[in-house]
Image (cartoon, rainbow, N blue to C red; front, side):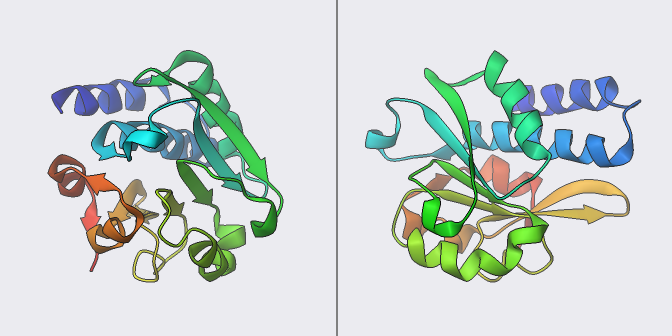
Length: 170
């Protein structure tokens, strides 16, 4: 758990000179990768590639692809997929919905009802509307909200360490 904090601290130092917008996407991608260390997927999801899906166009795809070149989720290679529409989304471990596609959250939730997919959003109020994790900016700092109640219906288990790092939403 301390390793997560050390990684984030080192990351903050490395990206201090990047423009704010690009820096935010890097933070979000790093957070997303570190979330994988604190969430348990069902056994059948621990084989093959670890798939991170992104709905629509988002600069986070570039950042996630860079992470995927260097990191794994336990023994699983990371595969980043971009989906043009909800209808085209395939099964994935994580699905990121950027702000520009936030209105599609109800459709995504219907498609992934009962499936072990971590749904991460990036718009105010979405953790209360069904997302498990929602990125927020607090006083200029990138943070995340977490709604523990939204994990169980998807068969995902989140550890208390991750909950303690986020802004808890019910």
